[in-house]
View 1 (cartoon, rainbow over the protein chains, first blue to last red):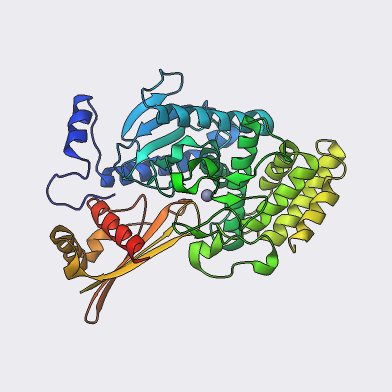
View 2 (cartoon, rainbow over the protein chains, first blue to last red):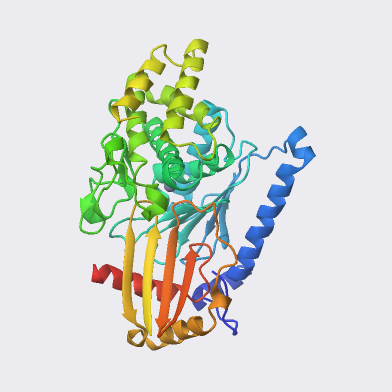
Length: 343
Length: 97
Ligand SMILES: [Zn+2]
């Protein structure tokens, strides 16, 4: 938010301002926030281009920082928990802290990748963003979660798969940087769902055959119990209700969405590769499929479409099968899975 | 003077939209919309955040006679003081639906 008001008023309720002042917190205007965001990003980009970074990358420790937005639309407003620091009296803060830790651990242990950038960047998490804000997002630097409207969604910071989804958008940004439009955008969403589901299955000690393959089922509002944001097993069946409408995800290229809404259907057409991942994971187990998908991600270009994704993935499957890191049948299974969705 | 509002984006595919006479808004929001109409460049975000994933995009169109003002914001570029207007329009969009 930018402050255009000629007076010094703030959108933050006065009682919150008073509490923050008591705690010694300076409240930035959104203009300051935006400037700080640009400065942080410019400094980071300059560092990444520098010779020193390329020769010896600075290694940070992927420390977690949780901020409370106090129902305003300000990010990094009040630091309420940091790495190794004491727990917060706010359960939401502790849950998102633990969930981000689980995601970080999975990427590190199973995929040998540290934080969003593989250089141990800090993991910034904002909770209680906005008023009844029924959404969560990655903005290029950090993750932000609303409390939900208690109709469609409850608090979005409470679900491991949602945190994994948002953090994976960061990982995609620093690897293939898939353009957020059309099929490359749908692949970006697909990867976020893949690791959302994979990390949830790992935490729940589930197998591909027994997992529900739902994304967001734990944040659905009280009247929507049993529904979800997406089903990777059966795209198009996750929800059907008066609040959200009907899940529009296709599970086959015959039904590919070709409109311009949703950046060309990034949250719609991701159903097609999601179904492919489900089929492959069911055949070779989720962790092996996750490894194959991640190694493929590192080879993709920003403009990769579904067809070139298939080509890249089959190439990596062959290589990994030869090296013994995935089952020998993987390439065949993957080829059949792509074919079954019309690719 | 007419005001159109569209919210797109979010974690799943959703579009909310509504249209109304500015004169039917609560007084404080009418003042804000008229200010935006007169000084639209002051409210235009300097840049789009191309790395925003799953965030909302808000599109406002204010028109009177032949003059039309179009503004697009993301969750991280919404001007201060806009939250009550967005909240009002979003609630109206849900009720219209
Ligand atoms: Zn996403």
